[in-house]
Amino acid sequence: MNEDNSIDVLLKKALSATHAPDEELNQITKKRMKETMILKKTGTKRVFRLALTTAMLLVVMSGVAFAVWNLLSADEYAEHLGHPALAESFKSEDAVQINKSVSSGEYNITLLGIVSGKGLTSFEDVEAEKSYAVVAIEKPGGQMPDTSDEDYDEVPFLVSPLVKGLVPWHVNIFSMGGGYTESVIDGIMYRLIECDSINMFADRGVYLAISSSTFYDNKAFDYDFTSGEITPNPDYDGVNVIFDLPLDKSKADPEKVHQFLEEVYGTADYEAEMKKIEEAAKKTDEVNNKQDNENIRIIPDEG
Image 1 (cartoon, one colour):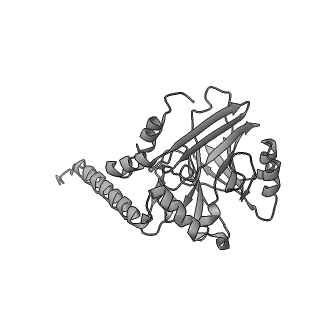
Image 2 (cartoon, one colour):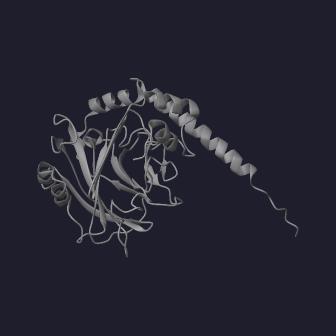
Image 3 (cartoon, rainbow, N blue to C red):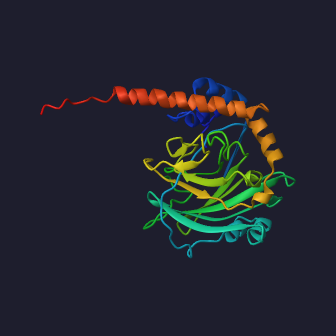
């Protein structure tokens, strides 16, 4: 990664979406952010770690099902990366085997599996429970560029959990202390993501989102403040896929969620913060709609 990818540059990119909180909220968010980044590239494997106290992200979906027989399984990819404990966990009863595929843009996206547990990799504190998911990205009729190719980063991809009812540009893989390991094997890109356990949100509803962006992109997804639903924007020019995760609701932990949101927003009254965010978003919509209306020229009927 180039030296110019400082926290200021990252924030500038993250906050550049057209449908985002107002500048005052952005400054509050920026002030609260704490950043840790490690980038390691070894052969075909790339590891990226980015933890932000509060961050932005996003994603969406359109597509059809297709065969996954030619792909590695989640446990096989974990074994490939040298994480035997994680590989065994992906084969256990606690794992959620998805193996669901959709097409979006030029790519086929497959969610292979998800598992949560403690000490499954060497990425984080073995006492902390983490969630892991493996996604495969294919380009039909071609191959994904290898990590050593010049055009490897030409099309970025973001893979992140999102939570129903929680603002996606605040609650995502960044604010959940996430990171990923990525490889290209036989022309197929595999990504293993790791983040704080998503089980704590199980009773709310959790998505896994994939988009062709580096950060959360408000243009890729629509967030409904009333229902809390996050859906793909059909007009988005790029990859935007969302998988609805079949989690066990009995594993939800409202107390942990409360602690998490208090840390993200820096206050126990995060519901008030959500109100401010919704009001800021509505103001942005009103401004955009006004500008759109002003740009409309009505042609009189000469008949």
